[in-house]
Length: 370
Image 1 (cartoon, rainbow, N blue to C red):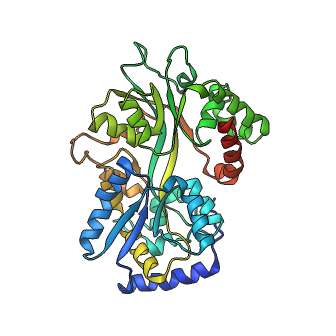
Image 2: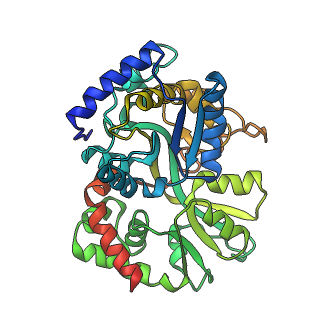
Image 3: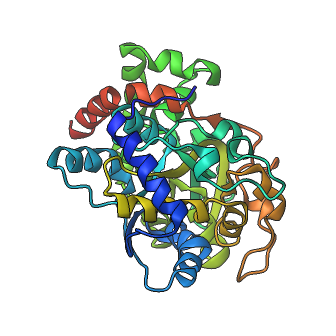
């Protein structure tokens, strides 16, 4: 279900900016793009930011690596009346929250985005991955675990529940400093069936149960905020296993030849994409719309898969996914959606987290501080 509560004033501004975009004038000559840093941001730079700038001489783009804090920062910017970001990369549940709060602009996907090469409208090409009226999907990725192949003995981990087995796999683990995924994995490894996880997590007892399971490894956890941290911790031998985004692990394994293995069991599927902050001046909004149209077309999303192992969100992009730009290896088998990697996946519930994130966050942070 799509969710939006965009302000009427924003919609009016959108119409004006779309007119400026269509006329090809009145655009700002600079953009601030917000993403996650590391290998993922590099893939964005290579696949569509650099080509866009080459096609638009005189236009500049700068990066802010604050996507993990996008909701809090956009709330603060809105309250201060000073929106400094132009196009922001967020996960789907954060896009829903920003849309609900009127902090992200509503997108007319068929009017503002390119159709597929065969004429299929963008809304059909992206399909069910458009989970919010403010959200333009880019990639399907997963949060999963990497492990040091030389630190796990003769029996490498095969189950996500091995993360909770300190006897078989002693040593530090790294987990993201947020409740998402950690709570689901904890309940699953405490015996809750996958289909019941969100029902259980909707109760106070279920939250306590998840935190109690996490308590069993809390003393051995290194908490991370940026996706690049776990690959570095693994490379340095500071953790024996850790969660991060599958593309970060691909980069460490395939590009850097680190002694790291992938644990695909209960990988958590998620979506990542763009939002445009509400309330941008007309010239900046026109530039943001122009960039968004280019960056999310069929070819650009397929091109991103040359640099990182995330599946493009457009159906028309999938057949164009080929080999790694530098290594020459086929990228399809490294995608989280490859059948060999997707035998037991966790389907992340975007809407549940959009509705419950603030409350669960507060409980999780209080638990962390104990």
